[in-house]
Image (cartoon, rainbow, N blue to C red):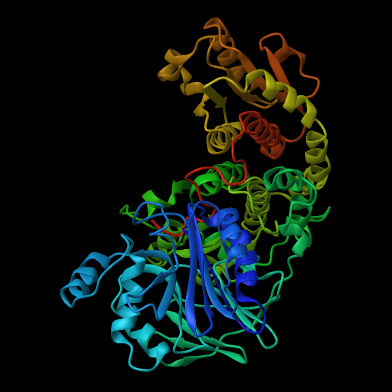
Length: 606
C-alpha cells in the first residue's frame, strides 16, 4: 500500500522522484523518502509525514545525481516514523531498496541474518530485503536481487540501486504492481502510470514474478528464474491535465464534476439509440451457457456491484450474487458449470480481488474484470475485460469511478440480456434512450451544488448519521455513508430502509440526522413509511428525492432534488448529492479531503 518511483537517465533524479511521489501520494503518505546516487555514494533523504515535508528537506539537500529511487509509505510493519520510512540501506550503505507489499517470512530471514551479525536499523520487513541483497551480492546486482527474491514469501514490488552499479536500476514484482516507463536516454519505474505521465506515454507492465534491469540506454526483462522475457510496449492515452486539479480546490471535487464526461466516455462506441454492443468475444450461445454470475469487489466497487446485481436481475434471468472479495476468496464457493465471476476494481490491483479472481479461475469459473487501468494485474489475468475510461482518479475517496462502474454494469446487464434472448429490442431501445440522456441529467444535479453546500453548513457538526434506501437506492445509501465516513471522519451507518426496525431505530433521536434516498420508484411508498417512522422519533430527515415530488416535502426537514429518470438508473443521479454533501461536510470540518487519514487509494495488500 505504498508508491514506488525510480529513475535512471540524464535529468536530476531528485526532481523526477519528487514529482513522481507527489503523483503517487494517494497510495500512502505517512512517510516518504528518496535515495540518489550522488558523488559516488548513495545519499538518503526521508521523513515521516507527507511528501511536502520531504520536499523541503530535498530542496535543502545537496543530492545531485541521475540515478535514484523514491517511496511514499502506508505502514504495514513498523510505526510511521523517519527510521522506518523508505528507502532502506543495508548496513554498509552501498545498497538501497524501496518496497511495496508484505514479506510474510521477514521475521525468519531477519533472525537468520542477525545470527550472521547483520545489524538492523528499523522495524520494517523491507530492511530484510536490502540486507539480504547485500549478503548475496557477488558482483552482479541483478543476480543478487533475483537470489534474494527467491527467498521471500508474500506479495511485493521492489526497486534497488547500488553505488557499485552507478548506471543500473533493478526492479521486480510479485503480486504488487510495477510499470516501466520508456524514454530517450532515460527510463523510469513506478507503481502507477500516473507518476510517469509528465515524462513518457510509452510503458511496459511487468507480469507476475518478473524483474527488469533499467539503464539509460535500455530495459531488459527477466523471469525470476533468470530467463529473458519479451514484453509488449503500451501507449498511455491519458491527458496529463486529467491528472491535475484543473482549477478545483480538491481533486475530489474535480472528479465529482467530471462524472457527466465519464458516463459519455464509458458509453462511447458501446451505446447508440439502437442498442448496446460491448467489445467482448461473446456469442449468443456462450451467453446462454452462463449459469450464474458472481460479482466480487471491495469498498466502493462493492457498492457499485450491488447496483450491478440489481441490473442483472432486472434484465436477465440469471442468478446473481455479490460478494466482498476478502470474504469470497476464503469461502468454499460451489461454482456451477458456466459460472461467470465479474471482478470490479478501479485499479485492477486490489489484492483481495486478485486473490478472488485466481481462486475462481482455479475452480474452473470464467473471469471478467471491470477496471480503469489497462495492463493492471486483473486486466491481464481475466479472460474478459471492460474498461471504465474514467481517466486517472487521484482523490482517495472514489467518486467518478463509481459512476463509471455502474454505467458499465448497466451496459453489461443489457448486453447479456440481449444475447441471451431475455431482453426485447423494444426494451433495449428504451434503455438506450434513457441512458443517452444521463450525462446531461448528471450535470443538472452538479449545477445544484450550492444547495448541497448550504445543507452541509446546517449539518456538519453532527457526529452520527443514518442513511436509508431500498432497491436500487440501498447501495447508494451505503456509498453515501462510506463517503461521509472516509473524508469527514463522521460516523455514518447505512441500512436497507426495511431493516430499520430491526435495530437502528433504537439509535434515532433529534441528534441523529437521517439521510433517505427516496426517488419516485416502485419502493417509494414503503420508503416513505420508513421516513414517517423516523420522524416519529424526532429525527431530522434529509431526503434525496425526485424533482416535483411534493409528497416527500411534507415529511422531511430538507430535500435534495434530482431529475426524474428510469428507476434502474436512479443511482447515477442520487449518488451525486451524497458525494457533494460528504465533500462539503469534510471541508467545513477542515479535513484532508483528497488524502484522508489511514486510507490509501489502491489496497495492494491483504
